[in-house]
Image (tube, rainbow, N blue to C red):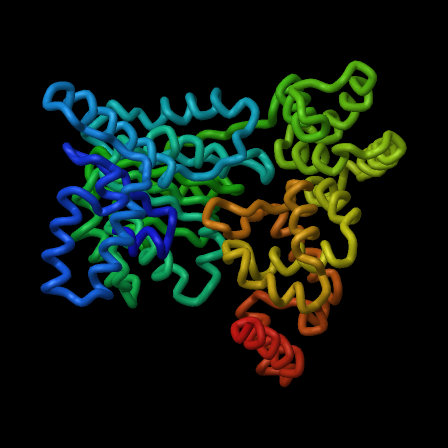
Length: 456
């Protein structure tokens, strides 16, 4: 156990000192001293010393000391409660803790109808980008996952299905999450059979985030009728049409935030409080109006303005107000204002994460950025403070898919006609086209840089 804990301190040891003095455990005295004297005759000193070290470490850990026979039931209850709390924190998804989320969670819970046990329920959350659909799905997941035998949350499905063998990759993620089994299926049909034989017999919760028309339930999960009647499915999408292909799907659209909640969310990021100071009430009102109730825009704009001088506020307000109402994607234009304030180094790291490193460990590209003199520590801190990226509890980069799309759009604008002239490439199709067209110089330099990263 101690060896496992040393390899990853997220693993926990919760010792129960059952009629044993923790000091005897730590110091190998009393009965432990006698036991080790016997062990020293049978085992090498190296093995014995490893055992002693393990006991010393375990003996120093906080646990429960049981010295009386009565009252053990209460201690058992306390241990179980502690374990449940740790397990919940391990499996709980990180959310944005969005202002006003509770009402939406309640509405989705009604649609899920968890008291119904004789038929499975499919709920589709749809709406324009920036409404907080992913946050809502995670909040619902966190609230109900403990009521299911097995759970799975699939992120960035729209993007995953574009990649070769994307459906198989999603199936393997489902199998790994539900069965805790690292065995990999190699074809869609094999994955469907495995899901039918081993997953469907459980009461499962499956959340599939960000689907589009390419997602087909039957070709990834199999037949809905094969699943337990207690199972629940939640899908999120920007395009309601994608949900119309799901059998008996119940629709829910979160809608934009009310003015009061918009002001509260903006104030949290712009001032670090629930409402603006009196002298800033009027300009805050103007910013809330241009954000039009979109949570993502309110967060990014508020974070950009935090602790900046009022002259800067006024300039940014005019810039936002001048975005034409006919602009096809006003959200991107609003978010781009925050990107325009990034330094060269910050922008390079932002574009790298948007194109390649969302979902990757933070340490993977760190040495590359340091070698390029991008000063990643301060640059990453700025990007986090601007609400453009996050580093999750697994120390991986996370970026809202609309911000990721914005970053990739900025890269594409470098040369719309010839993508191989752009600074970064992430599309498999673009890479293959470049190889077919003999545009290999860029790819060779990119892979050379990647190999350098791996070497570092």
